[in-house]
Amino acid sequence: MQNNRIWEQVAGFMQQLRCENLSEKPMVQMPGQKEVQNKLEQARARGEELLEQMSEKERGIIQEWMERLEDNASVEAQQAYCQGYVDCILLLSGMGLLRPELMGEGILEHIRQ
Image 1 (cartoon, one colour):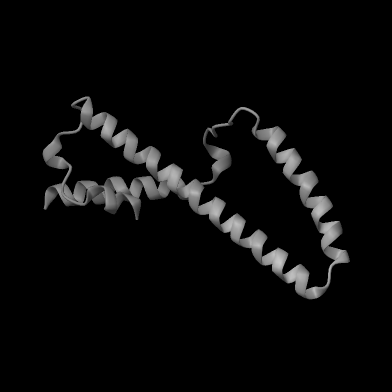
Image 2 (cartoon, rainbow, N blue to C red):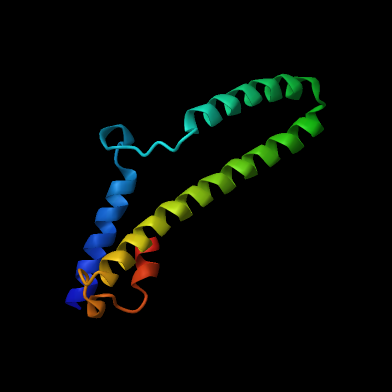
């Protein structure tokens, strides 16, 4: 029971890290990220101009597609973020810094929540 309480605290701490103000902690900047963001903004502006010329039905289809793309990107980013936690835990465990007996059954699923 002690192990579960420890892992619940770890999971709570990691959830808190995910929800804190991002401007207060170091952010990883990927190479080329700014350029990709600029190109996305340019494409968005051109796309919005074209959307105005489309019929309401066509516009609705394109907007739904864009929303689903953004939702998918968000889920993929969250998956990568959680995978980083999992990789870190596995690395620490492999280095012997986390004892295997503390890694109870289903702990990774609990952390992913």
